[in-house]
Length: 102
Image (cartoon, rainbow, N blue to C red; front, side, top):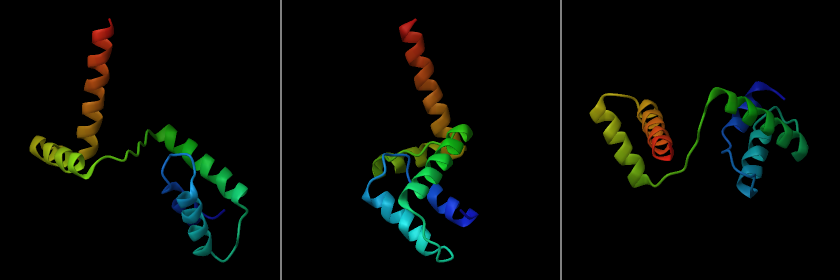
């Protein structure tokens, strides 16, 4: 598969593939050079993309719009990126839970 198709497949959320995932994959194929791929080939490529994503530490989370706005505001107030804010909050939460269990 070409790089453009791999990029489009990487945009599919890390969830069990559903009809929307299949539709996104099919659209990515149709925008490709016209080459069609069997769903199993696309699914295998998607698996590889997701494995590579795990190694990089990417995390895609769906949250309520109101919570998203709130954490954006908090990150801006702290003068840090949204990514840095969320990573710090998660690390704090995990550390706090581990301390409670000790």
